[in-house]
Amino acid sequence: MPIDAELLEILACPNCKTPVTLVKNGTGLKCGQCHRVYPIKDDIPVMLIDEASIEP
Image: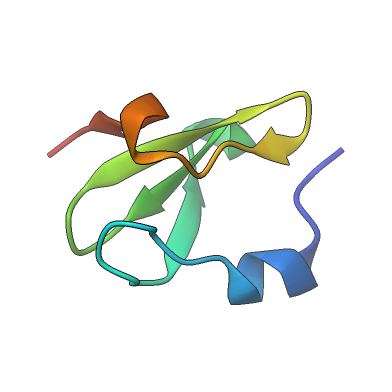
């Protein structure tokens, strides 16, 4: 099940407060500012800085 569009609109990076976008075929949420990618596990976004990876 994909992330609800309304939820995606309000989600922001906990590090820099920038909106996030879906990446990796819907398995992650990426911040355009600090380039952190937050995983989506069992259809739930894990918006924890310690769980994020940093990608270029």
